[in-house]
Image (cartoon, rainbow over all chains, first blue to last red; front, side, top):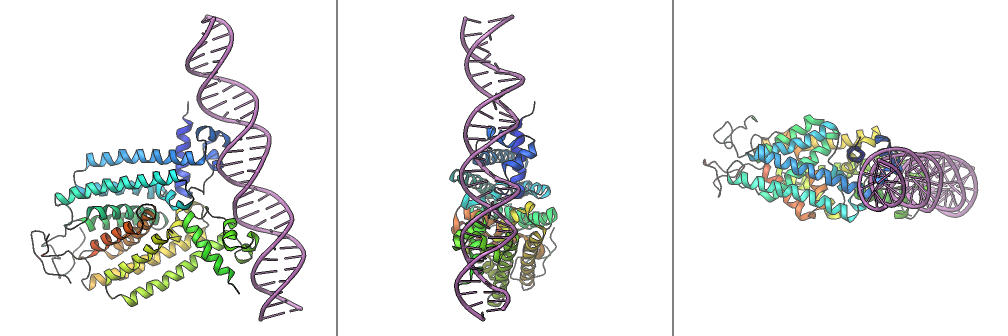
Length: 204
Length: 204
DNA sequence: TTATGGCTACCATCTAGTAGGTAGATTATT
DNA sequence: AATAATCTACCTACTAGATGGTAGCCATAA
């Protein structure tokens, strides 16, 4: 027997991430899942309820992903690179970040949904701030780096790159940005081809 | 006599940037400008025509802004900071970037509009790449920085920060990100409180 | 005179959401 | 074990209102 609710969530997520929240309708979703429009209301009474459930599921998946990254990657830069690769799959699938898509329509969003979005992003920023603070402490990051400000910057960069490269250069463009971001966090190489005012060195 | 077309453009831009493209309607716009819905069609035959006109006007304003920045700021970092301050006004006004808002709904956008958006962002990336290349050449930027990749990163960071901080911490949050971004482009400070094990000469 | 720019009055279609019903499974009661 | 009550998941049919867009009329200004 099929799990209609799960199918609704999966297809709705694809629709929202591709066309925006008010750009998709129960009609579209009904067609995608092959049930009648009215039946969707049995699972999600209102469109807002559906949106909240979408964010909840998306958030839970990210919770798991963040924990997995911390477990698998010991190094701060590697963690941020792994974090960035989650956004990369969005670019590859041609889908924006669910929460960014919703955030765009901020002015028309119900308060509860707006609050959930804020919680989602605050959580990511807090996670990154810890990762960065640890990296600062063990010297694997550029000295002088401000973990709090840089955490916000990292989320912003990846969110922006996903929006941008979904439109422009796809995963190739995204990878460039992710590489530039990681480079900007690394400690300056010393003694290499470009210590000081001399030439700049290659990138690897 | 009033310039209705200009008023329509101004109000439509506010509506789109606040609620998304399919989140605003001719009905909303008619109310905002105090004319009848049907009269809008006299100025903009279809909603797509209106969107194209919005992007054109937005693009033209940015053309002027980019030129003004180059004229006023001699230094690469100062130019990028000035560029970032344009996004900051969006945060202050509670409005997203017009083109980012439209890009979110990529899958339902008419081809012509999607192409205009790509042109808009490509232009910004090209402009930044030049600014960064010049900054690399005159030594005012971190050595080893890749202008092409970093240009994409800068646009992504600012677009992402605008989306994010409009929802979260407002201009205070945005300023943090902008500061972290500029810091990440500067040459490493030397001799300061946190020089690595090796000294090196000053950069300014 | 002829555009221009607005109007009223439409239209077909789509929107989220409701009402009420049905077939089948599950659970409770005898 | 048989029956009764309830629940689940879907359906058809509908509503009121919004949507983008059209047709055609009328005032004013060049």
